[in-house]
Length: 124
Image 1 (cartoon, rainbow, N blue to C red):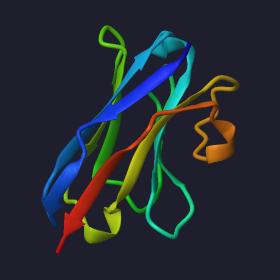
Image 2 (cartoon, rainbow, N blue to C red):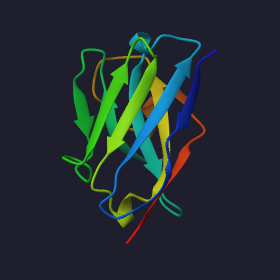
Image 3 (cartoon, one colour):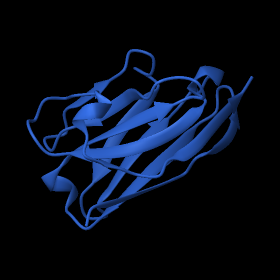
Image 4 (tube, rainbow, N blue to C red):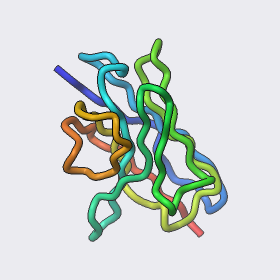
């Protein structure tokens, strides 16, 4: 059974940093394509970053240059390093996994498995 467990969220001031972790169990991270999404109150879930097994990545324009997605295969864990955080980054952050093609997709409906989310709050 595929399970995803996020951690690392919290409250920070604008300009601060956080690192989110997503521990996968029930499968190997190498077998799936992984991504981070976020959802703010009253807004649709949006893609933040995704990564392929070869290490290639794709980012939403709003986080380029500030966020970095990575994965550690021995630890079976996905990460999202978030620097220079802004109040508009405030949201619940979710990791997700999918099979299928190696395209770097940031569409929520393409993903099969989801974690429960971790809250990130950035104050001005």
